[in-house]
Amino acid sequence: MLALLALGISCAGPAAGPDPDYPPVMPGVEFRFPRDHGAHPAYRTEWWYFTGWLQGADGKPLGFQITFFRSRPSADPSNPSAFAPRQILFAHAALSDPVKARLIHDRRIARAGFGLATAAEGDARIRLLDWRLDRRADGIFRAHVPARDFALDLAFAPTQPVMVNGDRGYSRKGPRPEQASYYYSMPQLAVTGTVVKDGKPIAVKGRAWLDREWSSTLLPPNAAGWDWTGINFDDGAALMAFQVRGRDGHPIHAGGTMRRPDGSQIVLAPADVRFVPRRRWRSPQTGAVYPVEADFIVRLPEGVRRVRLKPLFDAQELDGRAGAMPVYWEGLVSTQSGRGYLELTGYAGALRF
Image (cartoon, rainbow, N blue to C red; front, side, top):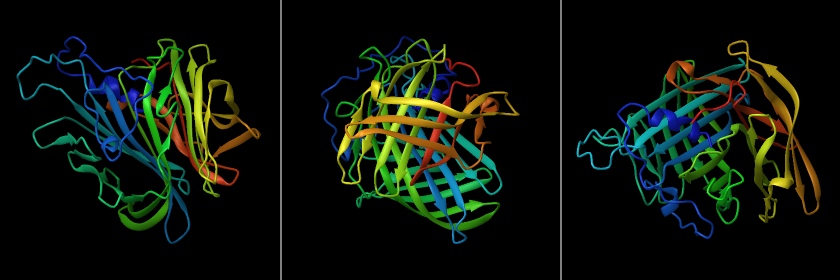
C-alpha cells in the first residue's frame, strides 16, 4: 500500500493530460505465475514490497525494507516524445539498526526508457538506474540496492506457496467495490546475502515478506492513512492485517489473511480485524504521534487471537519531506513467537493523493 504514497511523486513534473483508461480491479481474476510476478503496466500503480529481519555472525538484528513502485501517470497518450512519462519507476530502501536506534534510507526515481528504468512483464525484472530486482528461473528473487550510506545485496528464497489475499486476490481497501487492489503476499522468505553498513560488508541471513499489489484506484476520499503489519511466526504461520483510518480516526475498512502452520488460510473480513494502540511515541522531528506498540486482534474460527506488536526501537519514522515524500513510521516489530514489520501512515497529517 505504500506505493499510493509515491503516486503523487510519480505524477509530478510534466504537464498532465486526461486520465488514461485504467482497467478496473474486479473479483474473479485468477493469478498466473510467473506472469503476475511481473509488471502490469496498464494499471495506475503497482509495487514489489520487501520487508524483513536479518542478523550477522554477531546475532544482532537488522531490519530492512526494499520497495519498487511502478506508476502510469496522467500523461497525454498522443504525445509522441520519447521523454513522455508513460511509466514512472520509483524505489525506496531503508535499513533499521536497533543497536544504534537508527534508521537510514535512500530512493531512486526515473521515467521508463532510455535504458535507465524498466519493469518487465512476464516475471519480476526491474531496473532503476543502479538498483535492480530479478526473479531467477529457480524462483529466487535477488535485489541489488547500492544506496547512499548503506547497501543491500539480498536473495529471497520462497519456503511456502504464494499467499493470495482477499477474495482470491481481489482485496478491498474501502466500502466501494472499485476501492480495491489485486494483492498477494509471499511470507517466510529465506534471506541470505550481504549488507554494507558503516562502510563494512556483513554476511547476513534471516526471514522476509513480499507484498505484491496493483490497482487503478486510490483510497476512499475521507481516508487519512492506514496501519498494516506482516508477521512471520516461528512455527511457519503468517499474518497480514490492515486497517484504513478515516480523518476522524475511526476505521473505514479492514482486512487480512491468516495462514496457519499447516498452510491452511483464513480470509479476515472487516469485522474480524481490530487495531488497538497500546503505547504511543512522539517524533521529536515532526511532532507526529504514532501507536508504535499496538495489538492486532483477529477473529478466527477457533477463537480470537491477540497479536501484540512491540517495536525494537521507537525512532523508526521516515521523514521524507526533503525528497517530496510523505512522513510515516515503518519498522521492526516483535510479537509472541514471531517477528515482522509495522507500517503507520497519516499520523503527521492526513495523506493527500
